[in-house]
Amino acid sequence: MTVLPLEEKSKRAATGTASGTLLERQGRWRWYELAFWLVPASCYFLFPDDLVLVSQVLIAGLFALSLDLLLGYGGIVSLGHAAFFGLGAYAAGLLAANGWSEPISGLLAAGAIAGAVGFALSFIIVRVHGIALLMVTLGISLVLHELAVKAYAITGGDDGLQGIVIDPILGIFEQDLWGRTAFVYSLVVVFLCFLLARQLTVSPFGLALKGMRENSRRMLAIGAPMRRHSALIYTISAAMAGIAGALLTQTTQFVSVEVLAFQRSAEVLIMLILGGAGHLYGAFVGAAVFMVARDELAAANPEYWFFWMGLMLVFVVLFLRGGILTGLSALHRRLTRAKEASR
Amino acid sequence: MVSVGNVLFNGIAYGMLLFIISVGLSVTMGLMGFANLAHGAFAMLGGYVAATLMNQWGVPFLATLPIAFLAVAAASFLLERGLYQRLYRATELDQVLLTIGLVFMAVAGATYFWGPGQQPVQVPDYLSGGWTIGGVDIGAYRLFLIAVAAAVTVGLIFGIERTRFGAMIRASVDNPRMAQGCGINVNRVFSLTFMIGSGLAGLGGAIGINLIGLDPGFPIKYMVYFLIVVAVGGLGSIKGSLIAALVLGIADVGGKYYVPETGAFIIYAVMVSLLLWRPTGLFGRR
Image (cartoon, rainbow over all chains, first blue to last red; front, side, top):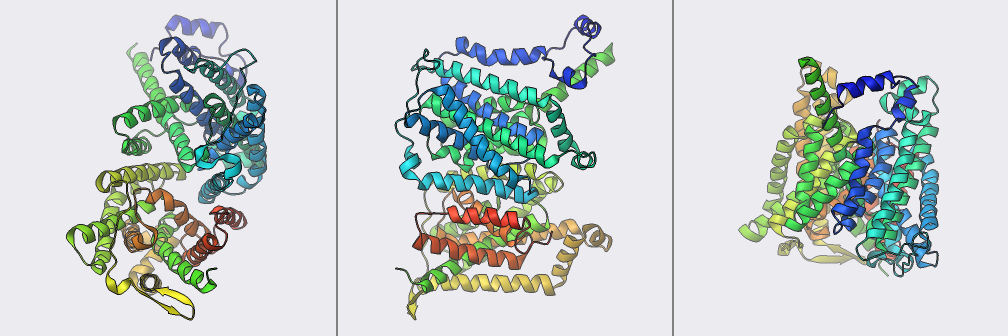
């Protein structure tokens, strides 16, 4: 990782980086953030044959980002976040299969539906903690999964929902065989959602969430409405997970009960932890590492690939607390300190 | 139409099996405060040990049960010392992630060594028959299972209430620092308790092959059931686990006979509402 040259640093200090409120300073874009988003954008030109995989990574990253808001900022652990991903996926799929084939309004509707269910459930979620919270979130996703399996006539069960038709995006861009349109569409939607999440974390509300995460007793003592904050972030996270699910349905034109399975809840948790929770970018880093590793491992030995997944998870929990991004930033700090010390 | 008696009998047998497997998890999660999702993997290991002994080495069925218990207890000792004890003070999230990782490894490992299919087992002749008493079909194997589970329950209650080691467990749970101060090696007590609980899971896995089958997906397929027993019964409560396991067993068997179209939906919904009503379970202490 490169470090800013000294002149650049002093110039920034002179032009007033130190000015502004804490939130304004935190909200400013750094150069590496821009560089980060250039990576998926450049994939369009660098890997034109792998755009389908890149789209999948982006969608998984958005899903992990929604969990990051909940877990990394809200401090609420969920073992069943696939519930909202699946709700969004099915909402988009059912709308498209029943004649509402305009994608953007379908996407928003799916997000709204997932958000509404999340809002209703948030009253339950804020009441439980610890192991009961794990069980309740897991239980809710299992209930939805069972419903989807049993409602075969509506959802198509394991065979998938039939007859999903998606109109050209904005009425202009048709879906093509190489997934170019799907890729650009995913990238734009994911980036917009990211902007929203980023804005949220540098807002006073985001600051309150961080306070709850760091010291909930003190937040209670200064009179922060903790339950309301928790309920709000749960709703937002649910809506964003729903949009991720809807995006998957619209770009693949397919949805089956697998979107609601426990496997998916576990995977998104793994992605987030792998990348690092509470960084926003960790979600995408984790999703990319997970999906690419899964692709490679599954190609190498299709039956046992998840052995290595499990090993990776154990390793991260034991030795890489905070995931890849925390590891990188610790490394970065150590390097800069070494440099300063040598001056 | 299946008679109520049959549903009750089969449900009790199934519930007793769930109890044997889950009671160890109740100890790990309730007494030691460790969210262990890999408990089903111990049960699966017990099942594979028993199946391999029977099918390849010709060990008689009854002898495989204690061997499964001991083998799983030994394996769990290594895991507890090597991995689990590092995370006793960590957050639930870390514990969940570690144990999910272990489940993935166990599933892949079982596929590698034993193949993806169901394990065939031959039940000895004296356990394969059955009787019909008052219109209820009493299967010999299920009766045997209920008897074993009843013996385990009595042994557990006696062990915890009446023995010196039981008193040490209770002391270590109620107040670990004080117990340590009295000269109890709390770590060792927990370690032994963990071994016994895992061993019982292994025993349950071995005895349950004939009832619920055995394949590499076992830890994931039944994880939720074990968790339900523990969470609903109340963490760390043997009585609670027993009642929850029996209710779950009867409800599951009854549901499959009478209302197959609802599936497990009702069970999950009841669990969620129960936990909202009493987050620590029916007989929870904390």
